[in-house]
Image (cartoon, rainbow, N blue to C red; front, side):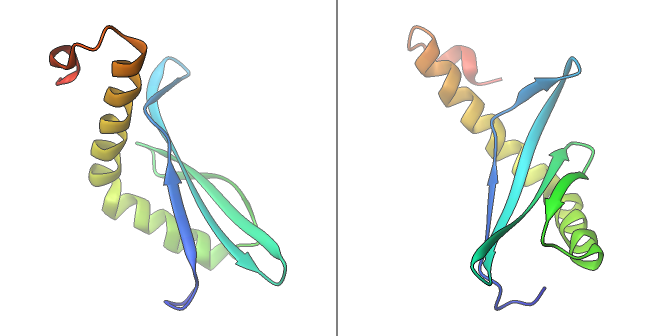
Length: 97
């Protein structure tokens, strides 16, 4: 992977998986008329599925998750608060945990 790769990272709100809070993270890039992807899960920083990325690239993506875990989790919490806000009664005070 080099810095010229045009990659997109997206992440979910906080979801329950196996009874524990998790955040799903997805990396995507276009390559030779197809879409490569790699998916990981936080807080474990484990890659869960992939297509088109090499083992070395997956190691780099895992390293990225480890180094940016706190930031991604905080942003995901913000998304979770917005989702709960629109599902609730509009009182934002209860979402500032």
